[in-house]
Image (cartoon, rainbow, N blue to C red):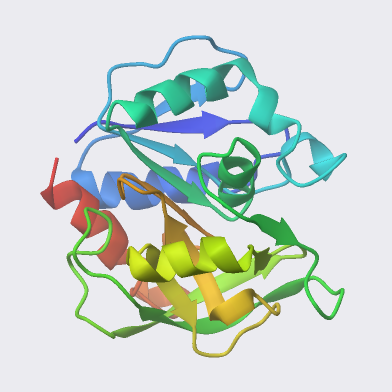
Length: 219
């Protein structure tokens, strides 16, 4: 599987994503600059965490208008798998590739710690390596991770099984403990926690490796 990682001014988790992808697939990802107007030939696009454009205006708001994001949106409409992590999730919401918004954490403080997630849907390209209801340990590191959506959107997410992960110990006030969601076609996933930082035992958990293993298997 060939993956591509989008790099914005202010990204800071791209190296973590590259290492996790290379470990799972055996192939080095292609780095793509936000100002590029073409995507390389690939099977997966990853938008990593960080503080794109310094989080000016709103988190992800400026990055959503980068030239490369038009190509990412077009590729997703054609079935390309897209993974947005933390700031990547915020960017996907700002581009309307995913519904809802990420607000300031309910306690108005930056949070960086281990959390427990429950896997809600294992019948997707991102989650097939997990078991139904499996609990996994990963890290969160964000100040704007409080997911919010309208009641109609929440009903749609629930009915269509588009909630990917829920917090068992909600660190930010996200509505219905939502930690990650899919688009309608389930080829786009956005989540606030960092699975790429849970692929090495020395880091305290390898539970995030299941996400990348799932993607590698369906390439």
